[in-house]
Image (cartoon, rainbow, N blue to C red; front, top):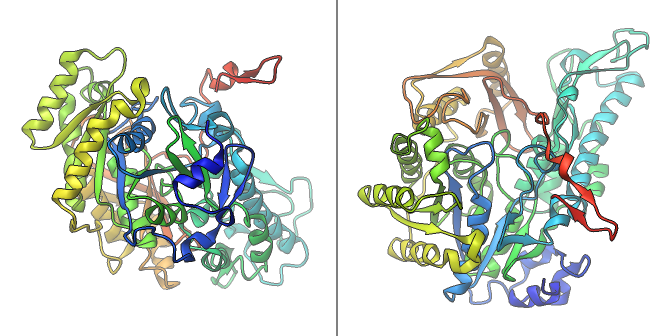
Length: 540
């Protein structure tokens, strides 16, 4: 790894623009956004969105391809920077493993990034749980706001897969007098990646915006039906203090010394699924090409980028890279590669409907046969879609140089694409859900539970009808059924519940049996992680 000062110098950053954390990491000052020296050439960089076809449980190497593409752009003479999410400890110790790429396409120092990385997740967890503690303290000390204890919606959070915490009772053993949660009230935990404060930090444009969003968090309802906010509890200042360093984007590097900004970590199946708006806004001022990885497939991370993140950042993508693999398409074809092609086609059409130029990246795995890779490439060519076989894991930037050339060509051929979201903010909340379901997922209809429809009506009455919608849905299928493969149509999207994230600025719609607190698998990766006698972490 190069010293962080050398990485900063590649971006023309002066010592006043960052604070080093160890030899290989730094926090960037928000002053970068106000410095007239950036962008260096007076022209903002192009953002490249990296998404994927429907993944298998172990992932398709989308992060590897994104890192490799950033390295490949450097190889072909383009100044590039990677923007990526911070990994959650849930997957690190669970099924999927770390989130820093692999082989010759990693962000470094990978072990630190996968574990405690500058304390950002801990700060978010602490700020979230501080607010939860202040809610219960308010109830205990007389409840002057007249909060309805049965309608408190603010949970606790923890950055670990722990299914036992999904539903818990608090204040057990205390006498209940109807004024507070004594005597036992049900609540629960969500994983930190699903915390509204994670979304707030990721979508904030600065400290003033962060304060405004924290103020707006709705934690529950009064007995008369009025929403109660974090501002009502005077909790915002303390949360701001806990998040004071966490709001600063983190500068690190890839295996080949390409600069990388790794900041915030919302999942795309239960949140908005991309790195912070601040890191993206800095990146387009620091480099000509910004490679921005979004979570899971096009109907999740990409849809949420166009409909939620782009509206907050003001940054339309110049191109989209759609990562696919032989194994993902074979899984979607239930054992047949060719039968999985409709899934690939659906994701291509999704991106084209958003108006963005598309290049397919076929991520090569060691067991892939040459004829399988060629079959996927030939199918792309028949659709008139540029594609590239990527070997970034084995060859780093060299293995993604062809992809880099094709992405640059796609951008230069269409320098001003007409990017458009899937719906208008003037649509009703239910119409927004329906348009995502039918236009992006391929559903034929939407079924809302009675409680979901009642809550949507209430949010509209409170003045939140123009918010975008964030659908929490399985990542293993285009539908809400993880066992439904391919690209089927005519099915019904079931919305079982909805919740308001007023601070983040969206309404969450939960589809099917979707959990905001995952669980560990039968054999978690935690069993293979250890520290040797020299203090080196192994197994991450």
